[in-house]
Length: 424
Ligand code: NIG
Ligand code: FE
Image (cartoon, rainbow, N blue to C red; front, side):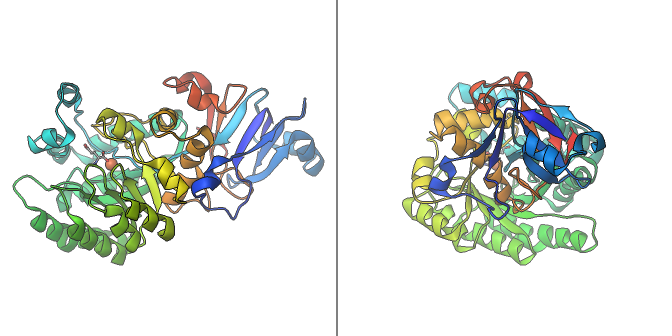
């Protein structure tokens, strides 16, 4: 039981809302304390929200709730928002790329570093050499760090193997965390993250479709892996539109949800292609076309925007206001990876407001309900409503917006992260 809160942001207190699109994202629903009558959230034994409303209402409906609760959290004067959902991360790797940060600051572009054998290639070399246990140790620490910054659900990609053996090693690392870590994880096969050194796009496409994916499918059948999404880096000089389409279709046929990198550095019309395939989500979209925006608005594919990457690579930011005007559902992700080393969603939300010109309510919805929707999880996660899991962030501030406003210091402002009703 959490009681006495000053403000609880429910996003929308309606179990049937799975995603908000365009203008619908302008408002969040807030339950405010009435004088001394604060707001309560009562959690059932399965970790789901049983009641959300004023303390007085809770006492009259559940008179013994305070005595019977396993734990009572006093939230007087504090605000509560839904647990944050990070819709896009690359968190399984060893070997950071701090040396490349200096190169990029000195003017090298992302692709220049990549083509010189660094970037993803550097991380692939190191990740191939690492053992599963070694990868798990750093991955698990990152998951705890994400959680302490308010994240309660996260998408995690493979993609630093680019061969069957290492891709499976990475997916197994993620699988272990799915079983052992409190965070809710959506896992993504991203064997088509780059073209392995010495290979070609044609050969790599073939390898992903004919070797990597079938091997993963077998492990899924045997119950050794539970992979949720298929991804590809659809980009000029990486996988072109047709190669990307073939990889995504093969993944879809294997039962995976389509969720991929499109229109980041060059306008390839990846968004339009993804919308045609019924993609659940498409990420980046800095270079999305008007046609792509219209296609995503009509397919309902969620646009996952990644302000850390646009910021660090000094890219033109994605046209989020145009996307919202057209009725696209926008979500946020940290894109945590050795290029964009940020795992704090409150910082991502701040950047979304300043760089992408999103309002604070829009960025909250993008980092909760819509991010859950990008992963197909919004039935159970992403907003505070009866029946959904009690994933919440308790903020020590008089208004919820402080979570975004006070940037770069989430540890000072977040009091508790609650995962399925338990203090994380
Ligand atoms: O989303 N664009 C491709 N993939 C990642 C970067 C991965 C890396 O550089 O290691 C991204 O930004
Ligand atoms: Fe990415």
